[in-house]
Length: 391
Image (tube, rainbow, N blue to C red; front, side, top):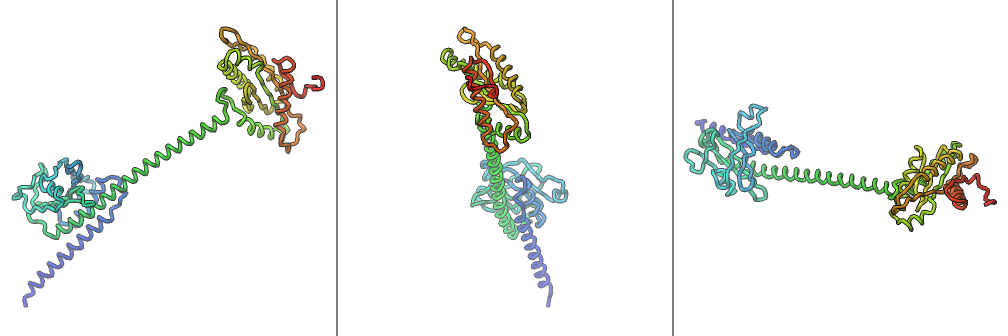
C-alpha cells in the first residue's frame, strides 16, 4: 500500500489544525483587549498585532469611516512587529465609499477579495505603498452599520483562501463590537468626568453660597459689622470664660442721640451714612477679642473681655470725643451727632452656673444708657455708679 496519500492527508489535516489554533488564538487575544486603553489608535494597534502574530498576513491596516470617507487609522507590517518601538504604519490616504476595493467593502458591507491586483481594475495602488499581490478588505460593522474596514495584504498572488476569509470575517465582527464598546466606554467615562466636574463645581458654588449666607446671616448688611445673631453666642462664650477664670468683663451699649430727627430732616440716606460711619468708628476703637454688633436701629453693643469698668469708661470717653468731632454735610448744613452710652460689668462674685448672666449685664447697660439719655445725652454712665433712688 502506498503511504503517500495518507502522509499528505495527515500533513493537510495538521496544517488545518495549526491554522485553526492560530485563528482561535487571534480571536482569543482580541477578546482580551482592555477597554481602558487611553486611545483608539492604541486599541487598533493591539488588535492588528494580535492578528498579525497569529496569521500569515504580511500587512494589516484599519480604515475608519468618518463623514462618508474611509480614513486610515493605523497599519502594521512585520518590520513593525519585529521592532517593539515602532509606532506602526499610518498613511494619510483616504478613500471614498465605492473607491477601490476598500471603498467597495465599505459601500456594500461585504468582504472583497483581490487575488491578483495586477489584473484587478478595482485595485488602486497607493503611492509608496509597496507591491501588493493579494488583498482582502472586510467591513467592520456594528449593529449592521459599517464603521470601518480591515485590510490584509500579501506580496504574493493567491496568498489567501476561504479559511482566511472566514477568520477575517469573525475578526472584523469582534473588532466592531470591541471598537464600539471602547467608544461607548470612553464616551460614558467622559460624560462621568464632565458630570463629576459639574457636580464638583455645583458643590463648590453651593459651599460658597452657604459661606456667603452664613456670613450675611451674622453681618449687618448696612454697616458691615456683626449683628445680634453673631453677638449672643460669641458673648456668651467670652463671658463664661471670664467668669470661670475670674477675669474682668464689661458690656457697653451705644445709642445715637436724636437719630429719628436725622432721618426726618435729612432723609434715610443721611441716616444710613451716619450709622455706617459710627459703626466704623466703634470698630476702630475695639481690640482683638472685643465683640461689637449692631443691636438694632441706631443702637450698638460691645462685649469687652479683659476690660474692667475703668477700662470701659475710658473707651466710652474716646467714643464720645470721636463722635463729637465728626461733621456731616447735610443739604448744605453741618450736621453733628452725639451718643449716649451705658456700661455694665462683672463684680467678680458671679456664679459660673448662672445662665442669664449676659442678659442681666445687657439689662444693666441698657438702664445705664437710658439714665444717660435722661440726664442730658452725649455722655456715658456705668450701672454700678448710678443711684436710681435719686434719678
